[in-house]
Length: 46
Image 1 (cartoon, rainbow, N blue to C red):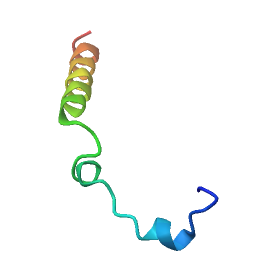
Image 2 (image 1 turned 180 degrees about the vertical axis):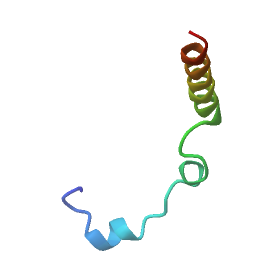
Image 3 (image 1 turned 180 degrees about the horizontal axis):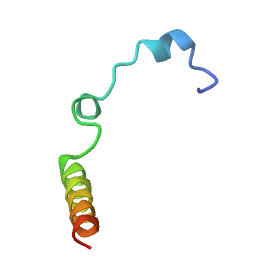
Image 4 (image 1 turned 120 degrees about the vertical axis):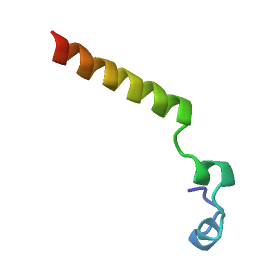
């Protein structure tokens, strides 16, 4: 917290609209899901 910023001013600050709607990019989630699916398939078939 900055020295000249009171807790009240910080509490009144609105969140960024873009960060609120999608905190993790869908491309990253798709990449993680595909790697997880590949790992399960690799372990199951070995």
